[in-house]
Length: 337
Image 1 (cartoon, one colour):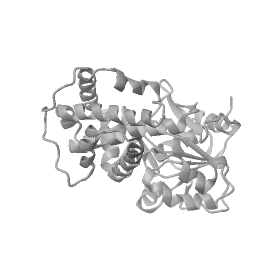
Image 2 (cartoon, rainbow, N blue to C red):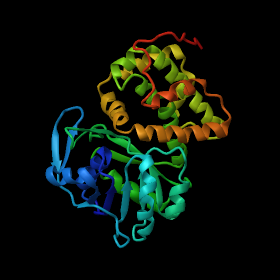
Image 3 (cartoon, rainbow, N blue to C red):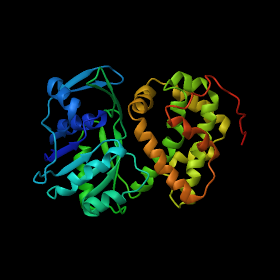
Image 4 (tube, rainbow, N blue to C red):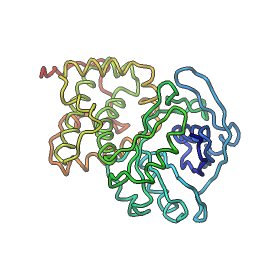
């Protein structure tokens, strides 16, 4: 079915905003990209340069660039892709613009959509996650891991209240027109986002910093993988105590599989080259977001009353002043159940 072009603003020209702007344009939409500062200067000079994280192939795309969203601007969709801790600063501009009916926030979020709804109204807010990875190289080039025609990526999106509305289906169609992507309409998007934060930011993220952002050191240091497995289990106990379902269901494997099996799997995964983009690159560029999201999780933990000793051991590594865990440390014995 031919795509009916929509006017879309991608708010944020970081690695994933850049990737989605290009893919939406390839789908036939009229896309503008909002950027400022040095990134805007780089885009004007070089265009949007994407490098495939697997093949190394580079493409250059030139799109309309804007520096601000004015109250008079009208778009069918504004797609917000940026670090969670930067979102509050842009809410006044989004709230002042009343001519855009759909604002899709695609970022990690454990605090819930309350601040977004308070600023824009529930009728304008949609939640989602980009399910891709990217990092800057050479200053202006975005090296990315993205969906392909052979292996499309499902992008979860949903309404704040979990309903399957006509506009959700409509936005899903616009996104599904992107090469390599297919929208997944969810009724549990808020829970999905909370579980995603629980999986990463009280556990995997601080363990990555504890290894000095070195994936091979992370793999060598067994104690970090042991603590990570235990921290993820504790984080999901927090979710359960708060009545938040563990979703997607595959996350429940961390609760079901034994530690002696999960730890070697994590250590093997840490050595994969894709981790350099999907985990290390983002952590290096966005420690501030990791700290922010960890605090959002801690607020949930405190509400739950669940004890989290492994999380408490890992979280200090989010502080750049914290010494790294000794390379290759393996002093923590396995739990064999």
